Length: 408
Image (tube, rainbow, N blue to C red; front, side, top):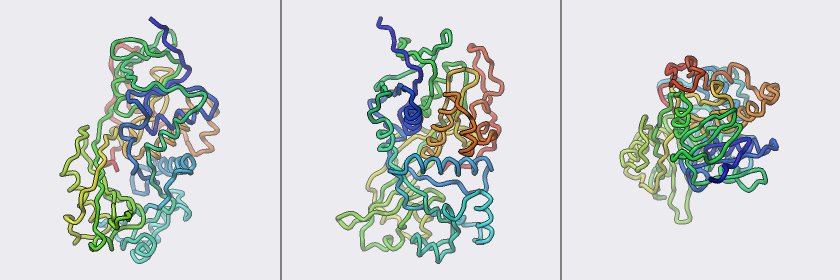
């Protein structure tokens, strides 16, 4: 049998997260081998073109709020060339009264200055965004084609090796070297350090190490609706992205005069079925009414014109799992990105690279990575009771941080 190739660093997973981590390492002068079961990059949840990015401004976990601000700035810097900065409007919750002073104070408490986020009343929002409801305007909010971005990140580079159509099912450590095996037990490659960035595919790989993480799938369907130019819906279509109960991108007018509008997404927790559903389109139609504050809109006039179905990976506390797996030296994890793949990928690239290269953490501090934020993302938060010996499975299903009611 041919001796397997050895690599210092292997990244398993060629979606937006794995591709971003690999590129960061390449830019640091390292050689990287990327392995994916598909025949090209970004074939799963990262294959869609409609991801949005903005910092979270709700009343949730303070660490989540700080992390999304940091991740937003890193993502903006990473994808500046392909960053579609059409802006994102976040409407006031229906059960809340808009108070400009309170909103401004809250934004300042999150270190979101006016160049990032400003409050708008309904009249101002109508002028700026085309939506007559109060809220917060994120002028630098954007969307990104994940497929395009992933493929560009993995474009030709002297230090990059890509193994496509290669399914890794088991990791085994022998004398400090990791053996990556396929489903027939053959060693495909060996590596000194391995980054697991394969979304739900990370779960069986972690299990092969004798550990468990509370990862679960969430199915989401995005709908593309076509709207006739004479329809009253046209007067309600936004000029910007909107993120609230669901999200939408700016409507685009085609050469045929028809408007096409992307609205999403359905939220089916614990499901991984990729077959499109009419019920998901109906759900998104109702979401559309709420997003543009058009309660009287006739949803029958939102004609189905396409969809995208993806399966997100989430953890119990709705924060990503990013960092070194201390129980198994040489293994690093970047998974559970949920619906914030753009943000968490940019953040994961910086954090994983610093940990993997045992770099000066003063750099992370300058970027804003306080020690509590690193700990909030670490796999260790779920593995407090894990045994060091790779025999018995161990897990801790109770996360340190409180769960949010839903992931967006």
